[in-house]
Image (tube, rainbow, N blue to C red; front, side, top):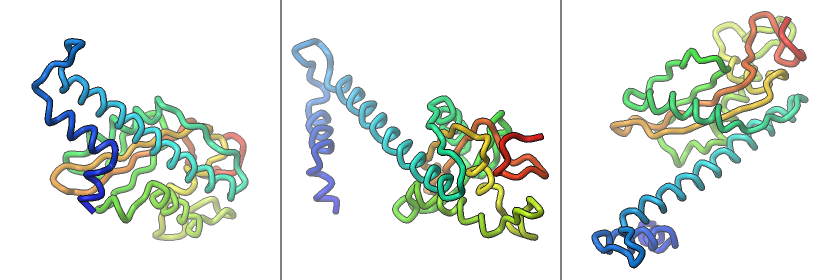
Length: 192
């Protein structure tokens, strides 16, 4: 697997850059400058891919629940990323207390928890939600699900960070407008 990874085009490019890192280019820029630029480009591409995965998973859940799809919001994603980075030292799922609705998830290994699987886990809480009483079943969680399908919510932004000391990964999603008003149904148009 490592052998295959080393010959991926982006890996080859970065290896070449590292080999010549002390030599200035003909334009006067150093290879480390190019390496930093390449790293930024790769990070942007990774974040764009993640945003599409997060949005797709949320919208599959929403459409199957009969509510309109969400739009991706980069401001919400930045807020989620900033909060996740603040939590990466201890990897504790402590909510930000910010102005948005918020879902959080922690997982140990990246390979077994795709972004879609994280959102699906939240969506599975639908089995714990009682639409007649507008509450969760006794002793069960359903707030992640109700936030995902909250009809008045129109935008989402998410981030995943690797926690320090191999503590796993923390996922944070922010929702605007926020949902989960006590006594309200997620399927109503607006809170009363």
